[in-house]
Amino acid sequence: MSEPANTDIIAAIATPPGRGGIGVVRVSGPDLTRIVEGIVDRPLAPRVATSATFRGAQGETLDQGIALFFASPASYTGENVLELQGHGGPAVLALVLNRCLDLGARLAEPGEFTKRAFLNDKIDLAQAEAVADLISATTAAAVRAATRSLVGEFSREVHTLLDRIVELRVFIEATLDFPEEDVAFVHAADVAGKIEQLQKSLDGLLGRSRQGRMLLEGLQVVLIGQPNVGKSSLLNQLVGEDRAIVTPVAGTTRDAIRSSVEVEGIPLHVIDTAGLRETADTVEQAGIARTWSEIGRADLALVITDARAPQHAGDTAIVARLDPTLPRLVVRNKIDLASLEARRSNIDGVAEIWLSAKTGSGVELLRRAILEAAGAEESTHDTFLARERHLRALSSAREFLARASTHLAPTSAPALELCAEDLRQAHDALGEITGAHTADDLLGQIFSRFCIGK
Image 1 (cartoon, rainbow, N blue to C red):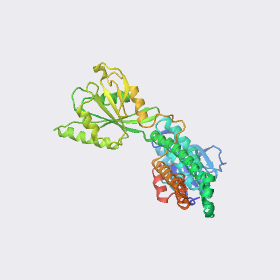
Image 2 (image 1 turned 45 degrees about the horizontal axis):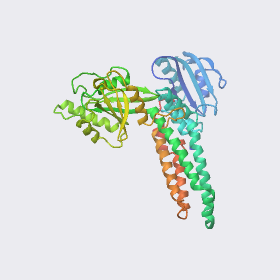
Image 3 (image 1 turned 90 degrees about the vertical axis):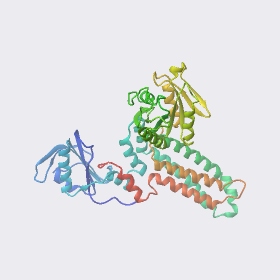
């Protein structure tokens, strides 16, 4: 496919830093004969776990463990791979690794094993990224989504879309050879209808991919409001522990307090902030400035108000300063003091949750509303752990398809050359996801974020 992998031998410790029962040194390259002979000093049958003594330059024992040899191309990287599984102490692993380096290997760069797997056609680029995402996953739902991408389900859906675009491109290119009949050909084949179906399929994949990104990165949820409306109490209720100090004194919270919690498999990063009000206190002013900075980075804002004064001018002023594109929920807190029941209502299309952060009444309504407002309320059983670059590529392909359809308007003669060009660009945008059209500098950025040894 792209370019052949390097011909040198790489080695690295493949298990996490620190002490453990087992540690693994991984080696990959075209010819590992010298390393196998120098460390194990016995032939290794492919894919057979062999009890072995790992030896140093003078034949001394470095460790005892299991040696596994995977012959090319039936290995993770597509090259010959040797795994030396010994005891998981940092010092003993360093001895075994240094012995591999003395025998001709070099230290692997971050992600280099997986990069070689990609370059040797063992996996595509989306699957390679799924390896890192699976390691980084913090929830069971994120693990399942990353696994679906790792085994190629995401890539298969992308390739299905690519195949459908290719069929349309072939038809249109062929039609261009018969300009006198192009209108009849295009309408008879319902090219516009097929592009519309492609758009719908792409929209579905894009929606599931956006959900997957939330599984990986979570949602930044910022709590804002006037002082003493119960933001800190609500943070403690959402995360299930006392993370923020709660007092009746207004202005207690001076800095952003962060905590995380999992709701329906979605990590929520909840940020309690300083109360928003006019103040001459220099320290409080700094806290308020940080509050607005956190709001600028948030995925969702919870505007906390006092249920006893739901139309307070101070709350109106806060809402007026918010970016209109920022999703938000209005939380009417302290219903226990107002003798009100927990409920959900709507005002101007924005959900209102009436609750008590003190007693917990209505907090479950808020959790469900948070997921709904973020577009994460649907089942995640078929989502993929997509990255930002995947979303950009899918969105770009969607735009090119939409533009291609405009060239087939029934009120005018079809502009097939322009339609063909937009379909080509949609095809190239989708190809970036799996690595069919990916620049070398992007590959460097992607694999440099992997851990060494993977």
